[in-house]
Image (cartoon, rainbow over all chains, first blue to last red; front, side, top):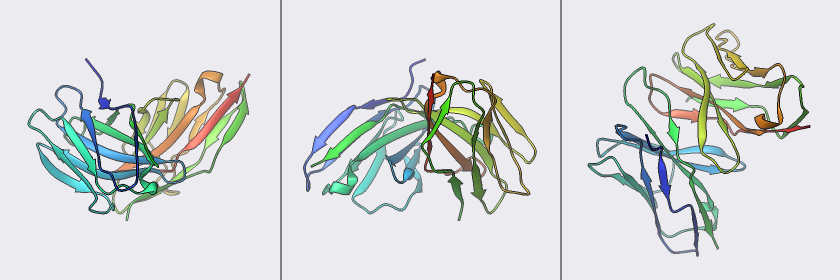
Length: 114
Length: 111
C-alpha cells in the first residue's frame, strides 16, 4: 500500500506570492490533516478535512486555506506569502473512528519564502 | 485548552546510554497519548501509544507509561543506538479528534 504522498518536495517563493501544496492520503483514509513544522514551534495544527468537509481548524490566519476532493486528496493554499511562512508543511492521513487514532505522515513540502 | 510540553533539546548521548525524554500534558478529559519519531528527511511515524491511565506503550525497546496523577508520559530506552538519532514528539488526542504535539526533542547518539 502506498504511503502518504506530498508534492512538491521543495518550493521556493517570494513574499506576496501564493502557493498550493498537494497531499494524497493512503488508500481508504478519508481524513487528511495539515501541520506546519518550524524549529521553534514544533508542529502546529492547520486544519483537518474529512469527506470534503473541514472538520477542525487551528489558529492560523485566513491566508491559509485548504480543500479536499471526492477521492480524499487534499490541497493547501497559502496566499500573500510572508517570510514567516517558511516551514515544512506536513500532511497526515488516518482512518476515522474512536479506535483509529494513528496518523500516517508524508515526508512534507519544504517551503522557503524569500 | 489541551497542550503538551516536552523537554528542550538537543540531547546527545553515547551509544548504549539510558534515554529519558520528559513529556507532560494538559487536557480537559481523558486523552490518548503518543510518541512519534521523525528520522532525517522523513515525516513522523508512530512509535508507541497509550490510551488510558497506567497503560504502558512499548516498541523497538522504547517505553512510556501513562501517569494520570503526574500528567506525564515520559519516553525511556535502556540502551540507545546510533540508529535512534531522530526527533521525538510527544502528542495527545482526546477521542481521536484534534492532535496536539510538543515542540520535539532532537536526539543524537554518538558511537
